[in-house]
Amino acid sequence: MEINSFKQILAWQKAHQLVLLTYKAIKYLPECEKYNLVSQMIRATVSVAANIVEGFARLGSSDSLRFYNISEASLEELKYHTLLCLNLEYFTQKQYDYLFSLEEEVGKILKGWIKSQIKNKREFA
Image 1 (spheres, one colour):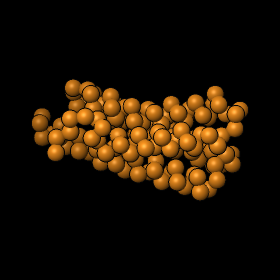
Image 2 (spheres, rainbow, N blue to C red):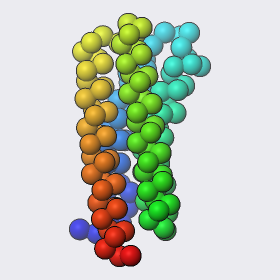
Image 3 (cartoon, helix red, strand yellow):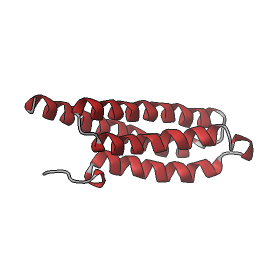
Image 4 (cartoon, rainbow, N blue to C red):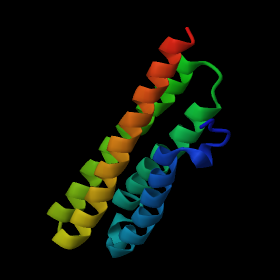
């Protein structure tokens, strides 16, 4: 199946779900974290989805892969922030587990997307 829009990419779809969930989750953080942890979590989670979009729009596959890698790095950053929220007792274990499971799912799907793009690069080189 040919993908004509970033909205068709499963990795982006799941990353977008993660953005929406993160926005809901940050409501549990205290006001004192508004310009610290909240800001960092929003930037990281939006970066995951946005870099998939930007990578998809790039013409060169090497350039695309660079953006997908940035997306992976932002996801890892978000995982740390999520863990920090648990450790600081801003999230319950249940909230953490739910958010972290989606982060892990996004990571697996994103890795699969990247592998498929590397394979396509080799086939068309």
